Length: 70
Image (spheres, rainbow, N blue to C red):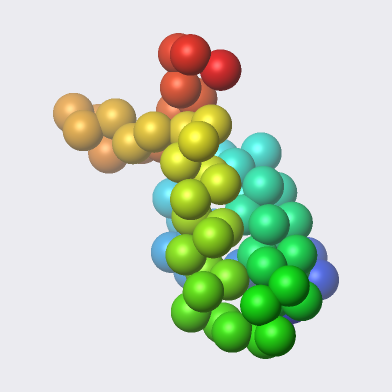
């Protein structure tokens, strides 16, 4: 089901991603939900892929940060 607000995102997304990354996740998930006939698993994969284009997880701290090349 599409996410109306950031607070509706899965806990793992809300607790680990910065706000801008959450916004990307929500927008892409909602678009993929429509595009791929409500395939929830696929929508989550597409959303994470979009986040990973702009953000990366810092292995030493575990925090997500913007990629240097964006």
